[in-house]
Amino acid sequence: MMTEDQEDMLFKALGHRARRRMLDLMKEGPQTTGALCEALPELDRCTVMQHLGVLEAAGLIIVERQGRERWNHLDALPIHAVHERWIGPYAAYAVSKLNQLKHAVEEGESPRIR
Image 1 (cartoon, one colour):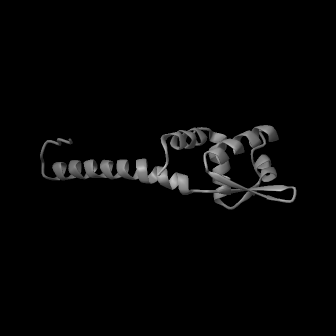
Image 2: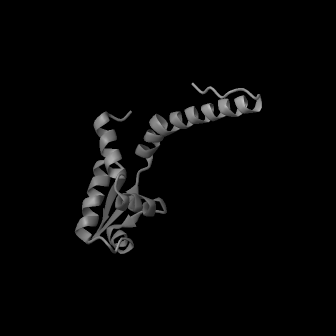
């Protein structure tokens, strides 16, 4: 279970498009910092490193140093925790309401969704 501070860090990390792009790239496999810099040419290396620091602090990446290279690995467990806590229950609620609406329309009733 994540603390509220951890959740805040996670949502902050996910709140920037460059960080989300980095995570998308790491979904395909571990990426070196240099490869991430090449994939995001609009950002300089210092900015990429700052974004990686935010992702690491949020627990979204695990950094492995191999010689001069820094390999960045995606850790999807915090995202799964957000899904379990927020997305899954809200999606189930929305499906339930849509199902109620469908049955009301099929029965010719006035839709009353509560």
